[in-house]
Amino acid sequence: MKIVAHRGNKRYCPENTMASFCSAVAYPIDGIEFDLQFTKDNIPVVIHDEKIDRTTNGRGYVRSFTLHELRQFDAGVWFHKRFIGEKIPTFEEVLIWSKGQNITLHVELKPQKQKVMERFLDVCLAMIEKHNKVESVIISTFSQAYLAYIKSKNPKIKTALLAKTPPFNAIKYASKIGVDAIHIRHTYQASHYYRRWMSKGLVVRAYNVHRHKDALKCNRLNIDSIITNDPKKMTEAFQKEEKTS
Ligand code: G3P
Ligand code: CA
Image (cartoon, rainbow, N blue to C red; front, side, top):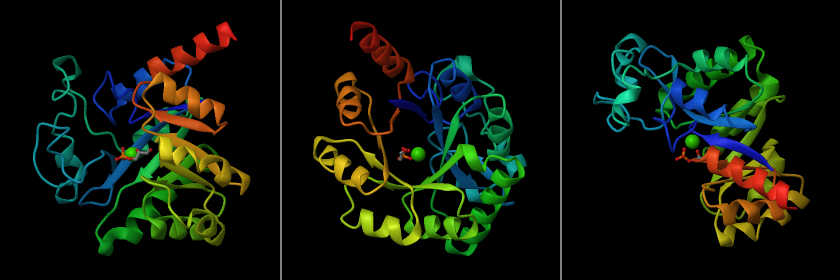
């Protein structure tokens, strides 16, 4: 079972910061997940919300700031004072840092205004290619249009459709545009679909897996990965499981 750290070591660190990513890779994980938004001057940055209010000491939309302006805000203090000084990372910063790490990057593309959508996707893709990361990046998004666009620009890049509930057309859609995986919010109901999707060639990863019993269930169902807020708890749980089996 592969373990992916959701927004880094989210339980113990401010999400989507370098501190969170560096903390996550201290555990035997397979990947980190993070979210991309787009600045006013067209730079992809690592932050979940379209506004900076929840995870920085500033206020306003990411898209209304240049990168230089965004970097004036603190992205750590809201979580704990020991993280004072953390900045919103750029995508490029994470790509460069990841060259020293043996991990997969699960890059979630957040929805953008229609007028910048193509530029956002083009810039993100170009950055992945520039840093030779096509093999170690998985692009995920809730937007089917974004996935279709990315796949049409570079068929080699791995893509994953995000879903909160099982989409009724997952298999048909995936084969139509060449989506490689489905990332589904783990629930008891969703778990009934895992085998069916895998039998059709889709890679299945479950997110929102934070409890030991859910992780074990995903493991029994033989899915590829779990995406969790707590890589410490999950990696320890599997190590314990290995020792007792
Ligand atoms: O990896 C799945 C998950 O990140 C999707 O939801 O809201 O946490 O970005 P969200
Ligand atoms: Ca995400």
